[in-house]
Image 1 (cartoon, one colour):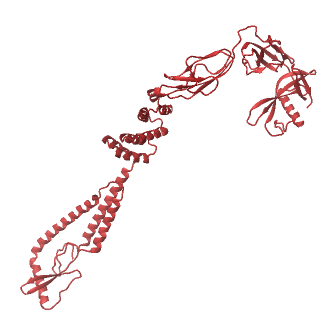
Image 2 (cartoon, rainbow, N blue to C red):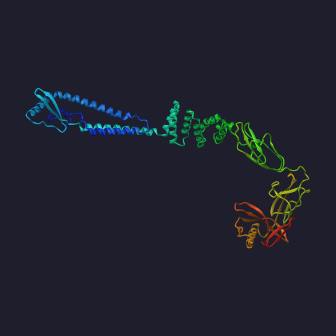
Image 3 (spheres, helix red, strand yellow):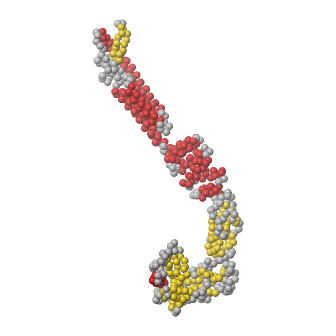
Length: 536
């Protein structure tokens, strides 16, 4: 039939606008819609399941109204062609009376109706639904479902972002719904694990739910990863204050980089005590003050032992008025019971005896010399020990002991000598300066190389690098002065042992290298400071 025709040109029957019921097609459509509905229901997002169904219903209503309108138009045309219809019906009746069987279409329907001559059977041809209309219905259904699915996933993507979760957490915070706030804040923290803002919202949600332990744990973790997040201090510190855990307050404030925060809670901080006098060596008595901020207590020791709350309480300056070595160690405990880190300082004190007569006597006057000299010093009386240095520093009890004459070094030198009594009290310090000018045939460095080679030849060293036969460490040699033996001048070479870790110490062995010929000898010294040479 033509698209615009409402009646069959052959039989005159009206076009059937409502589709026949086909079970297979209808079941397939139901299953498709049900599958999409189940998939939407299985998601974790809150999406109204009525969304797709309402859209389909609206479309069905629209189609039904369209069909109803078309039906009304059809009925109107039907009335205008009533005469043609009666003619077709009469022809069919005549054919049936003459014994002809009615022609039945594949989808025809048999209709029985009463008449004066008995029952009359009429076959109405069913032309089915128009293919274009059916396709239109199916297309609209698919489009609506697709639009629903797209809208669902767009919403899902939008609601899965960090910004959305954070905004929702803040929204529920303003509404006082801390359960929902916690849920969204956790999601935000999972999406952005390093977000301090998200962790802070989680902590606030726990606070709103009165779950203090969880709030504290979250805040502590936040400050470990982000100690500069100052808002966390103002929330966490009151928790510690309420529980009386002042030690925790002190610990987190030590790592806080914000001065405004540390100033605000300065009373909780216990800084290590400070010393009014720098550590070092002194040739007079020293008065050391210990300083700390706050109204707590300082505990200290002066013998190097660890200070505790059982140690001496600092109340006045510590007077170091005797010769000796002191190591002061101190701690500070503030009014909240927080104990500070320890601080320490070491002092070497040499207190001079107030007796001008206790002055060492240097027998060799200061000056310039062109031949080897021996420096000799005497104490004013017995019972005193002389200590000396050759580096310009004041002698202490840790300096070298003078017990025999000292060979004058080559070049410039300066010696200090001091007397100490049995109690370690120091007398006056005497000093002298010398210059030994000589022109030896070989230099001190060459003398060291010649001696090393001679010791290798003698089997005392393994190689010219100074390694010994056992392979443990090495030995080195340096010229410390020039001495005269048997009418000849020699470099006095001091031997040192260097261990594998680089530490050096004197071995007590001395060698002599002739400053003109380079010949090497082993040297011994007697108690009077006299040297003698022997072959290697």
